Image (cartoon, helix red, strand yellow):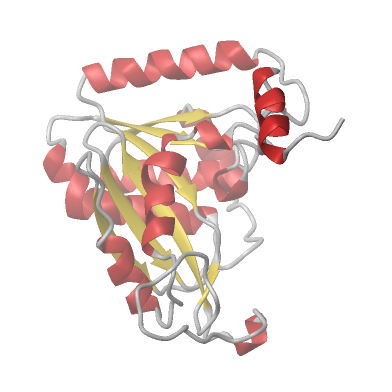
Length: 258
């Protein structure tokens, strides 16, 4: 029987078929007590917000190359923009490590653009600077900071070096630190992913990042209809990877609960 494309589409739609894209929803493996961990994290987060304790969602965004490299997105112009035909790091003017801190209670983002490596020391230095420049004035009565973070990366729950850096951070700013790690393979539920990083990605789209300062300016210009405000700074310090744990950690760790 010969039928037109129109009738075929009508028959397919009537039976509930349509074109769909894949969704990343199947976990790599089952995590024990995954639901219980989320419920506890939600309960602690709500308690902190109700008590005026700053809840900071932290993570490090994908590293970006500096140079005339093609980026996703479009830009309004008269002629087609031209970029290098290969994205080789050897042709870049360096790379940046964007580490973000998102204040859940105030809908404010703090992006630190590093030029070295993503390490535990780098993460804690950025928290210390944001606390000194902004948060200590917004939360003058707080004695605790709540950190929401993934279970991997520089802030891994398994890295003793991260715990040691947190101890130094707590001493330096004179605050208690409550750390809430999300279960494995659940980083997409970290608020910073969809409340800050997604919007910064939009600000960086359509045009190459030709300099570190250009990346900072475009990140700081990020805004949303719900009032997101972004402060961006550059951290040009050099950070050593695979740094060993200091000997004093074994004695100091008995005094702190991480």
